[in-house]
Length: 92
Image 1 (tube, rainbow, N blue to C red):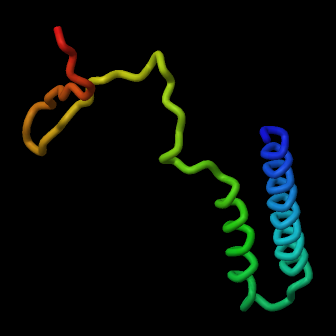
Image 2 (tube, rainbow, N blue to C red):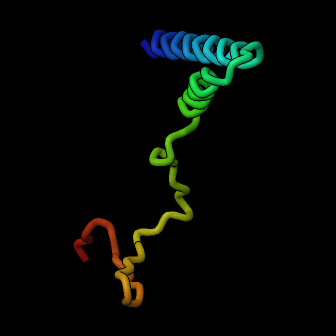
Image 3 (tube, rainbow, N blue to C red):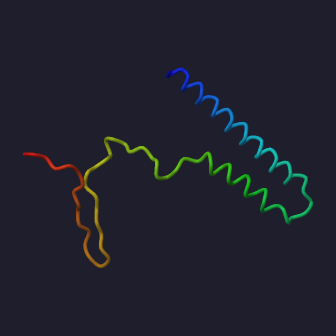
């Protein structure tokens, strides 16, 4: 089952790379031979959308375990910052 899953992931990756390469080659080729500027925005949007698709999401970043802290700073406009403890309650 695990081998089948990795084969599916590999196939998905190959399809994504192929689609991305196809769109990038098409957009760059059209921009290289285009003499009119009215379609440039369409091709630039195709290029930037492919780049955005491959960029990692800013919200899905992995936290570094040694730098993570349960304390967060809470700042209200016009006041000094307060430390808020975030975590689970211990039974001590």
